[in-house]
Amino acid sequence: MKQLKAALPELVAIEELAMVATRWGHAAELANVEGFPIHAVRFGSGERDQPTLLVTAGVHGLERIGTHVAIAFLKSLVARLAWDELLHEALTRARIIVVPLLNPLGMALGQRANGWGVDLMRNAPEPAQFGTPLIGGHRLSPRLPWYMGHHEGGMELESATLVRFVETEIFPAPLAIALDLHSGFGLIDRLWYPYARTREPPPDFARIEALSQLLDATLPNHVYKMEQTARVYTIRGDLWDYLYDRKRAVGGGVLLPITLEMGSWSWVRKNPLQLFSGAGRFNPIKPHRHRRTLRRHLPLLDFLLHAVISHRAWLPR
Amino acid sequence: MIARLVGVALDARFAARTRNLRQRALAAQWIAANVLGVSHVRAKLDVEAPANACVVSIHATSLRAILATIASVPVLVHPATLPMRWRAVLRAFGVPVLDQPIEAALAQGASVALLAA
Image 1 (cartoon, helix red, strand yellow):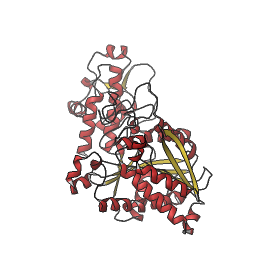
Image 2 (cartoon, rainbow over the protein chains, first blue to last red):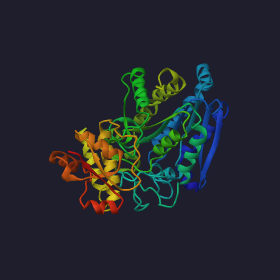
Image 3 (tube, each protein chain N blue to C red):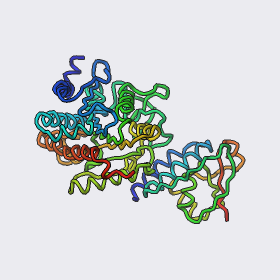
Image 4 (cartoon, rainbow over the protein chains, first blue to last red):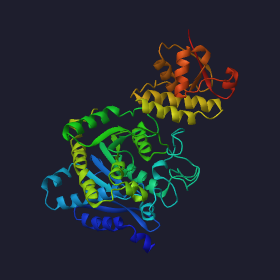
């Protein structure tokens, strides 16, 4: 176990940051997976009916860069809270919640799935009946990637923890934007919105379009392409599809789950040798590229925070 | 657009592999919704699917209308009632159509749609 923990410097960084963050916010351990805790750090009002920005990362253990971006965001917040009065003021009107590492055991083991071979992003209950074969989720074997879990196994601890947390902490918000950080597909950075299980536009398509237009206007020349998750292939058991539908069924606010899929193929194109390492296919290896990735997404996170706070000005009713 | 439609057609080949006609009708619904969804068309009608399998008559003047109907209610369209071009397009997308007697479909719980002349 000690050896595994040594393979997870991200967890050490998160725990240090969580301790510092308690000066301005609240840190909690949501669950413990075989000795590996899942942490959540919250800033801002304790009232759950405030607009909320949720940032999650580390759902897939191989995609370490997502967790690194979340840690960079946390570091930036903690540093700014020491002097930035405007940020303090913003946090009286909104909440920021960061869950920087949802699958710590998978990351320690250096694998996409959790410790039991289950792909957490294909593990939601009531999975769609149809989807792209294999990559869209299967129940053949945990030895293959994209395994959804056993028919009667229920949800894995990590996914169940996220679902429970979102239901209690995020559902009461009038508007919540959930940004889930991933990497591994394509040459460009994409912002994916629901659904993953079907190419049908989601009921909140107009709101997503409004957010997309706001992003284009606010951050001209940004690097993101906004599109539906199912554009290329469809996924069964997607957690954000499940939570999006649950929130719509509960009513009382809007949840816009967005997945940031960092285009890791561009890193491989620039440095083809990293194709031969597991981590290299999903993460920038060269130090300068890693640093560039860490700073690249901070404007997006800042934009989303402002969009959440000022949602009355742009969100179609 | 073409790449996305190819993606739908590939997914459709796997979704419609079953021989159970009820499952094929559900697959047809999912595929039709996905074909329309590729062009951001949300064409589902807010209609209750019939509780029991039945034969329905549909009036459609375009392929898109046929797809919207299938996307709304899980049915297997009787291919003999379709113009040849529409039949070819549905086949290309992988939308399953009725390939057994109507009685067999009804017995397996799948509704059948006939295009009204």
